[in-house]
Length: 592
Image 1 (cartoon, one colour):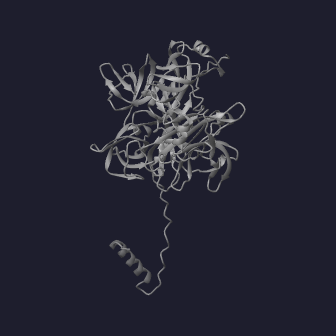
Image 2 (cartoon, one colour):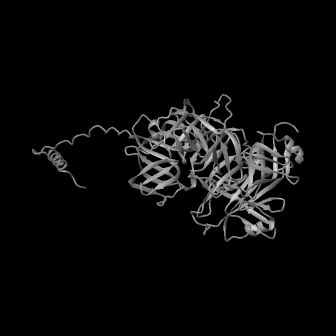
């Protein structure tokens, strides 16, 4: 240790005083008062992310104390934590201490991205049309107050999520909006395109927005906006247009902000301009930006960025691959629980909780691993790590009705026994028969062709099994679908996790392949055909037709059809011209 000169002089004088020049013993000075402990230094950060659990609020597996927080929900101050749900994307003003104590939250802000009426549902491609725009959902989306299978046209829902590269929102949260006092307006978000300042219009995806009555100060193509208004004749008449730019965080705290942490999908990278676009908003990269977890960030990666408020530049980019993709989905009953390692057994397979696991139970806000019991019914989405451990990304505890109403099993790994025509996915074995709808690369096929494809392990593939319980309590498989990935050279690669929505197909828009679609009749063409959201549908005597759960004839079915009525079809495109329906169903809510 090196002492400064002033310290040496002080030490020498103390030694001389202690020795004493007169030979008399000198007393050692008593110690002064104990130093007062230094108060921990607090800094304010803004953090955005998806709620993964409660008690207080968990984001990214980290607990944030909200005991003394204020809550603003959809623009309304004075709200409470009870208005929040797992899956919501929130922004928090957080007091962070330098002594590593738990972070406390000053304020929580939540604004939905989309709210409005469902006008179409494409279940095969996991897409919705809401408030005039398309929405995607996936195996990590939290459905609150409703399920994927029970969601219907004309339901009013609220959605939170992240923008994808094409401007379509990927939902992390979908909730049935059953507030009878809610306004009649619809809310939608996206990226401005086709701006016409003369006509005062722009488009969000294919939706035309007229902003003449919105008192807009300035607007440009490429900006992210949220629009409130009403849709009339296919045009959204906006009463308010709110811009979201790189300084969104300034309104979230009155304190000096030291750092902003924001999550989202990388929707653009401009090497020449040294910019990155995350969740539809463009930021400048600092010269000394740090890349963590993955130094080669690419478009469509999910990341968390750190923003320096003094320069408004991104100082850190961290890859968070497991936030938007998955390796499989299962349903089943818990048969064993390892509390020490936080592992549960479902269908004979082991699944591990992590600090990033999202938990959901519509009847228990504070659902956690400790709440689980043997025989609980659960649905799990998971990733598989390099040691072949199944890591739970999302777990939902279901009641008996929800558990029985739909079953989906998905995985990139499965076993096939061609001799017995059996496929085993995540511990569940299914015998393939001609009575099951078999879909290969989005095209309905026969049993022999499907068996040959599914037993070919030279091509990485994703398999999905759909089914449910019949009136006798027997599990019935309705559809088995195989999607082959011809671009993957190594099915065991660490980068081979797939986006649940990335594999989505736009075949429906191109007039190709298998279709599961719900919409509204837009016209009646003749005694065996009609249009559904503009798509021509044809039926015949071989089509399985149901009216209020009763089998009916073609004549009875067509008699019930009128413009504006909702119905659901399952079929396939023919020559890109029309959809031939294997099944069609109308639910009027009345007895036949």
